[in-house]
Amino acid sequence: MTAPLIVRPRAEDVEGQPILRPLPSAQCRSVGPFVFFDHMLQTRYPAGTGMNIRQHPHIGLSTLTYLFEGQLQHKDSLGSDQVVNAGDVSWMTAGSAIAHVERTPAPLLASGFSLHGLQVWLASPKAHEQGPGHYSHHPAHSLPVSDNLGVRIRMIAGSGFCLESPVPVLSPTLYAELNLQTATTLLIPTEHEERALYVLSGEALLDGEPLEPHALVILPAGQTMTLFADSDCHAVLFGGTPLDGPRRMNWNFVSSDPARIDEARRRWAAGDWPTVPGENERIELP
Image (cartoon, rainbow, N blue to C red):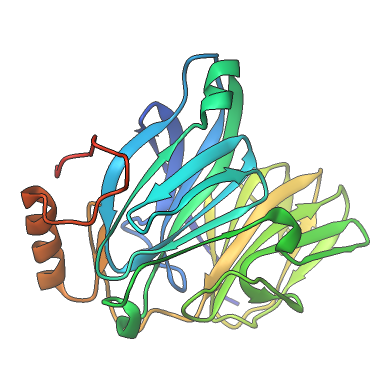
């Protein structure tokens, strides 16, 4: 039996929102198609304050935003304009060039609110890296749920545990929200080659060993493992088929070809990029 790999996150700040970022790291560059994992820590915003992430570009990836609390407004260069509620999935595939904005909706900005959620990036397969962009919104009620013997599983994207999400992933993917009541057990199967577990809150044991909240646990391939909740436990399990080759990440760009990243940087710096309708401000190239 191989022991899991433990990756501890680094603390960051995105436009005033504190986050923990365990992926990518020097220890682990990807888990299945997942190349980036941000835990937006539960934060209370007083009236008049909120998030405002100005226009910024992407290539070669899909972004997935999933909130436990609060709302975000998504706007992109395809013309999408969507308020994302807690439990919804906001899915954007960049293709060869897309720009988007993420901000607090005006009603919440006026009243004050709490925000808590996750944003992940999934690298596109090589065959889709240069394709057209796409956006889709999937309300909470459209995501399949299993609720049995104190263990609730919601399939955010991909498939697993006999559930399949409607989110149009581009490769075999697992992304599930887990809620375990105290003293319940979940068997984590080997239906996906690469898997990682991230405990958001609560105390849990993995094959009898205590898990550290907010640490990313990379599960050994081919090993069925048992998650036991010492207290009410909230976690996510994610992974899928390994990437079809290495990826380079630079700022907001992901690609199997470094030349495409260099070209994307040049185009964004020159203003040669699709723009979000009605938006003038943008984040400049670092």
